[in-house]
Image 1 (spheres, rainbow, N blue to C red):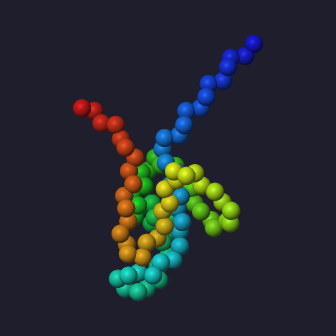
Image 2: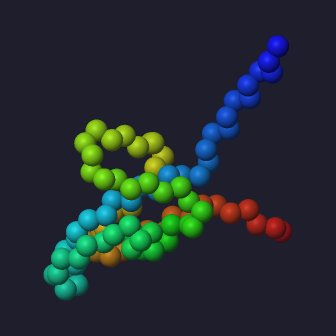
Image 3: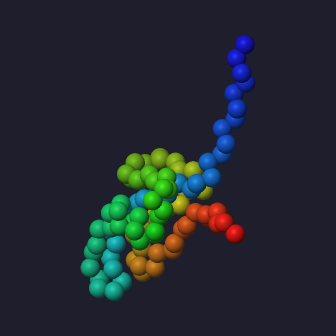
Length: 88
């Protein structure tokens, strides 16, 4: 007789989906390619975060709670931080 399987706990860490690409800068009007590592830096993605890269394949579905990181024209990148427990 086998033991009943325990249900998997839901993943609490969000998935960061990187969308590298070209953006035209608002400040200088030049075209800039923003790659994976630049997106991670600009959005300040935590080093321990789950990360996937969108390769542009049509029909790809991402989890509803995924955080999508794309190059932004205005350069105003929001900061997404996982909540960290603190010792009080």
